[in-house]
Amino acid sequence: MKAKNNFSKYAIIVLVVIFVITAALLLLEVWEKNQGRYTGSVLEDDILEYEDKEYVLKDNIETFLVLGLDKFDGATSADSHESGVQNDFLMLFVLDNEAKQCEALHINRDTMTNINRLGIDGTKIDSFTKQIALAYNYAADGNDKVRCGNAKDSVEMLLQGIDIDHYLSLTMDAVPAMNDLVGGVELTVLDDFTGIDDTLIKGEKVTLMGEQALRYVRTRYGLDDSTNSTRMKRQQQYINALYEKTISRIESDEEFVAELVKTMDDYIVYDSSDHKMKKLAEKFDDYEFLGIRKLEGETKMGEEFIEFYPDEDSIWETVIDLFYTEKSN
Image (cartoon, rainbow, N blue to C red; front, side, top):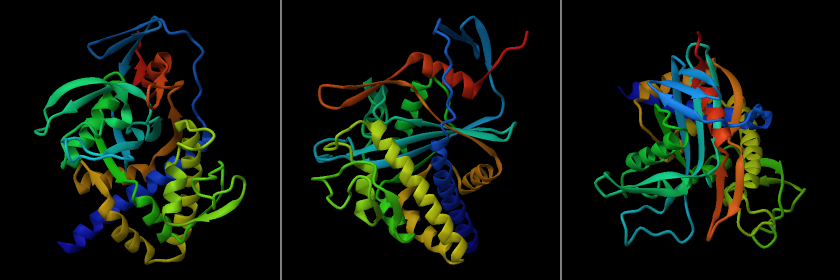
């Protein structure tokens, strides 16, 4: 029984590592925006009408949401059921089990969309428009799966009601742990961190260690450009470098995967069985990866925080490309 459990844990870690591999391909920039104008959409009985065309849902589509969780500055849950954690990184993987292909959608954490506030018992109290990063926060404290479920619901609402089948959350505390486990990550600093971390000088090559790695991928405020789009570029760069270092360690040290399992196991929450996670890991490994998309839109400064307003055309075009096919006459 112990051997079986260990094998299941290996599958989970393999899934996370493959996620890192996939996310690195953000640099491919496969998203090609359509030039047509939005002319309205109607959804009835699983038939979507958009720009005078009818679409039906694809068969054998499977969706998998990865959440990177982070505690925000000054957060406290002492006087409220709300947690002090945000889903700071969101990426939705869409697997086409018929074509054996996979695509991903990187969702800006500042995206303004509908989120639900849940009570202590997990029931809905109300809903409102806020940054999607807060969806995890407005849910029952002490229940990670309820909070992840609330974040999943917000992504579904953003994507016009598309169902998400599975999720996996990974706390940002895992970044320095994995970073140091591989022996540090080498890269060229993209932004000027003067006054925040004077060891991170724009244009210089560094080997990130410990909390320095987390600071590099999470910092926004205090930089010349504090938008999440700029931070996403650093995250993409870091993920790419981390992947290269991780693969190098796996190839050179046969004991490394077991050490990776032991280190990462405490940082992961997922909603499916170990068997289902193992199957997902196998699909990520076998399927052709087509790249990672993002929603187009406008970034604005709100009353307190940055807000990203996704373009309605971009939402519908992305949803149609990922989940629908044109109806045959």
